[in-house]
Length: 377
Image 1 (spheres, helix red, strand yellow):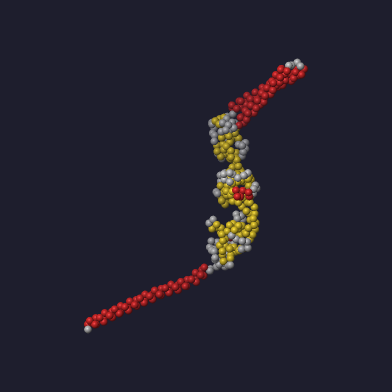
Image 2 (spheres, helix red, strand yellow):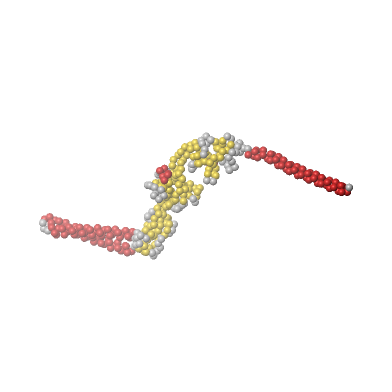
């Protein structure tokens, strides 16, 4: 009896445990199902909000793409150089007595740069002048003898040998006079070259000699550069060489001042392509009265080759995207992002060589917050 009661109690406990376990599973499953239902409801509730956000229209002014003649430019690189750059030589031999310039001195053509000791040359010059006077006197005497000898020969008084001898003396006297004259001119040049003068207007970039040094005719004394105007040397690739001509307009900027635009025109065009680089060298003269530009500066230039008919958009409609340019075209009420190739024209408008057609509408002022596919208000 007691055994049966124990078995009955045991069986009740087992059944009770099974019920509790089953109840726990039901509660757990119920809780899990409830969480998934709530998440699904929340997800369904957020989808309309995202759709509304994506469909939110943007407001932007638009403008129609026009068409017009746009200047055509060729972009080149080049370097500024001095119009004249000379290592001024002494031209005479002698000791340096005085130096009249320093580095950076501004000189005019004919200004004294260096003076040499010319005492020996001056003494030789005086001797040459005396020799010239003697040669002239001897020639006058020889001419008088030749005239008398000519008359005597005509009358038959003088033999042919004496006549020939007299004529030779006349010719020798003339040659001696010419030699004395040439020597005098040479010595005058030596005395003049003892004073070394500026061959052109410019600025002294280097002074080489000092007082007391001895120089020869080929010794460099100063380096002189002409800074007004400067030469802008540009290299044109072979494919574009035929389009560049004299007097074409040129605009350029310097690396040191990229926002300052300088204007000039093509002054010289090379006769042919260089063998090594297969390019054409052209030059433009750049006024530099204030000497704000310096030889050696690197320049980026644009040479105007003419005009071409292109679609035209406001400069504000084009937005930079790294090395590329883009704008937003209005298509079926939405924005269409397009990358375009623009011409390097000046002013408030840009010519578009590829990417947009005349008659289309574009956003007048491109912004960073605009995106492809956005609905336009």
